[in-house]
Image (cartoon, rainbow, N blue to C red):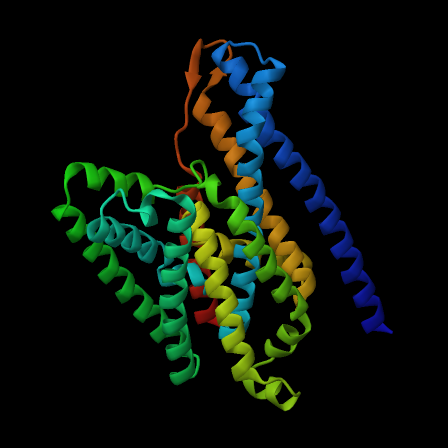
Length: 350
């Protein structure tokens, strides 16, 4: 009887949380569109004509689609990765996707020049970069997690070393380039939330949808896998095959999102743990939905706030304007680092 009451309370809590998150998502997207259109027109003191609104929305809608799709895939692959590694303080972004992304762009320019189609064409560049990240991450995840029996510490150390080698190697190669090639590489690797590669959205979004659907289909399997390898195997789950399958999906999802929107190292960690605290369940389907919703709100609302603050806010009665130019990725990574530190201390006390 008590168990039934607790389950009803949890279900009621989930419904309330999902309704609130849905309202916040709609409000975040609305605020972002307002910050890109009417707020900018008011700040620049220019009229917002229907033609201008249509042109701005032509750039705003792809940005919203990119942020929403990136938030969803990062949340889902982060939760799946935490399940198969049995760790709440780990996210696949921490392994060094951003370093591989920069290294791939640098090698393309150094080997073939800036006028090669693999660098100039956004579509070709997207597939080359994503393919390199998928290949490297699969080799690293598969070999380490399989041979070391989920040795998380070794995985983090290997990822840290690989990231350092690739980053420093890319800097050395960039020092050998001409000024023109160097600036081209810098422009290509300066992918952020505010400067995402919208040209590849029509290619990236279908891939993201496929990965999301495949992860959602297996939500019951992940519920069993969260019990541990031995328990999941005894309940009929082919743990090794499912882990390899999940690693492939994680690698594809993270590679595509990094190539499209840049590195968001701690976003997955934050939204997944926030979802766990909000709905208090071990079931992956509601956790998937809640994590994705929190990720969308974080990214879209943060981008809207960045737009509003970077434009300057007049301070009444003082006659000055407050301007804040802190990138959203910096705030996410700062909060994420602090939260990882808290989780490590919490796990150590336990």
